[in-house]
Image (cartoon, rainbow, N blue to C red):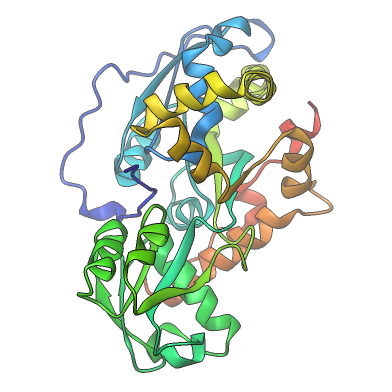
Length: 332
């Protein structure tokens, strides 16, 4: 079972140690960085191209020395990025919006994937519509992408989080609790959506398949890194999209490499990928848009930041123009 991108409050972190992650301010010519580029992500099948670039030496083919770490808690990643121990990281757009609003100097430069069925709400058969959730207890990881998804689904149907009773539970645990008939409603992700079929009185009430692009992952670099080393950012992105091409040409091997990275079989990885859209360069440009004609990611940043402010998690909202820089992808 793979882990997913949860979100914890930044101020709850008491200590952080990320060995071998000391940023080197080594400048090269033409805006190039000659040191080690430290990046991190949580374990998530949607980060497939990062795993492939790591495993198949694709970064090196573009003259980059990239050191990758699995750092499951995004809170740790944001702290490391702010402290200069990471140059870049992957996370969900809603997580970036929250932390950027709190002053984390992250600039999103390309989108990674969108969930199109990998996240959802499980419910007893007696609950047949989102409207039926009113007054019900919902197991959901508060402050996470799952709560964000729940809030947007409720909003779409004229409801809000105040119309349900939230039972705070990690998303994987919520899925397991639903399968074990311990809760009646749970917001979770695969593989728990599929496992829920074993519960005869339960079903998938709604999934991200009906809300494509609502849950989106992106990659960001530290703001100062983007400003100092624009050519390196471009090279990094060229390597990333080369990994997409390699995946298309070597699908069997790619599934195994990704499976090794996330602890799943090739068949499980294939099933996971069917519930998400990995963005190629063309789709990535569409999602990002331009500074004058914004793509979907701008809407997601704005909606997420406003949501977290409404929840009292942030005091002010980041401007999408400060959170996203579409110039790099449009120059590829």
